[in-house]
Image 1 (cartoon, rainbow, N blue to C red):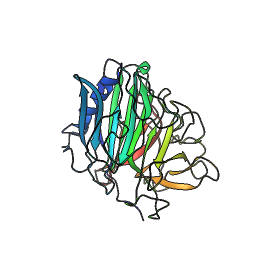
Image 2: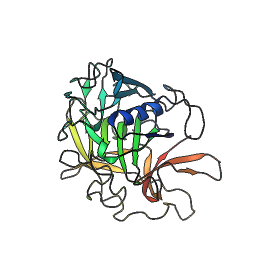
Image 3: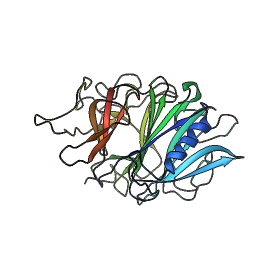
Length: 328
């Protein structure tokens, strides 16, 4: 059965300079602890869609930020983003990525205990740790972090000065549509990590799912795009691939509407990334949008409310995009 509807909110954007792992982590923390959303409305960490964020500093230098989502699911998931500009820590990586200084990493833990250490085998003391994937490095230069959040997941867009962007999502962002033990965790969810990769900007967000660095796909090399969830009941990871049969084969260059000019919600299905490409689930309250700019929002003239928030391939000009639904 479907999981609870998620209410995506745009927290805002926080610039960072210099181009360092610490600088980006501090920008994430600034957004995570914000008392307002981008539209000026009140935001209370631990309530509604807002996670509760903490920061780990080593000798005054930020090395990790981590969060407990607003909805505490039965498997007690927690998010973490980490990285250092110097030093030789030994964090647990998710294959095939390898650790390197100057890179930022993201992960999720289920059946979590208290925070232990970001580079420990179990950063949250207990449970199952996904392992880190890289999602940004200092060669990309200065820019800004944009944070989107819902009750059970967070989506970050790290925009570069040249308009390109790195994407990362962690949490329960995939709905298996089944409560069978082989399809879902005991709480009916799937937990995982998506990154557009540690080196290249995000590629096509609509159309073919086989292009290099395409959105929500999985590459088999270090610093490539990665999309994985825990296999239910354990710590093994399942690689996923945006379905290219049911999704459009050409980029959406307009706004997706019905003949009556109302918004058309096209579900985004993820499958296993090897034959026979079995369906695994659909993205929670996300849909293809057409062309847009990250940070835009779609509003309803009839109700005056916000329909959803736009995440695009680029941050300075219209390009392929998706919508995260507000549902409130």
